[in-house]
Image (tube, rainbow, N blue to C red; front, side, top):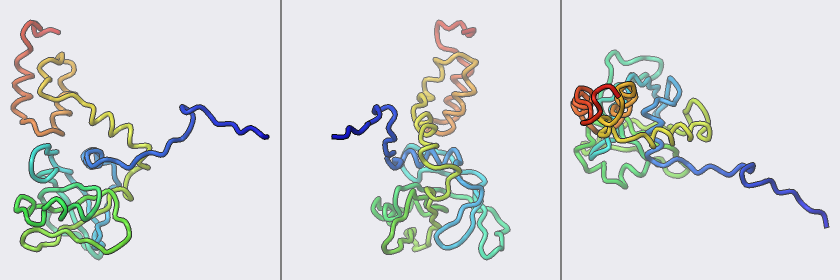
Length: 202
């Protein structure tokens, strides 16, 4: 009987699981997507600002800035509003956003994938259709290559602990703070007031 060689587990290529919703949010925040994205209704959209990452209630990103283009014509004005991220299109209704006025200012519904079946178009409480794009097909690199970066981002420490970080690390803390729900004034206090016993020169 011929023996078959099975490489050690460390050398095998294990299938990578699809991203979680939080990882898709990290992809969006870090702008790890193509410069020009395409929505389900055929529009091209350029993301000027992905928005401020919100870890509280309401849309995932606020004050995002985008420029839409349809049939080769670019909108004269920038569109400013919120961005909501889900794994699948139907999650919009599944999470009750279609009946929640907190999502009426959403300018983009970003989903990881949109599998076959009946097309789904998200809408606000006023029945305004929200532009939707599939991010998984428009990344700058395959998901397996981007997953380690997303994992490192999500392991970042809470900015509330920035007061315990030496001054040389404050710029990194500021970057972490910008993608959380902590208020900017909290970091400014941390930066101006070293932790007790640190002497201010750690």
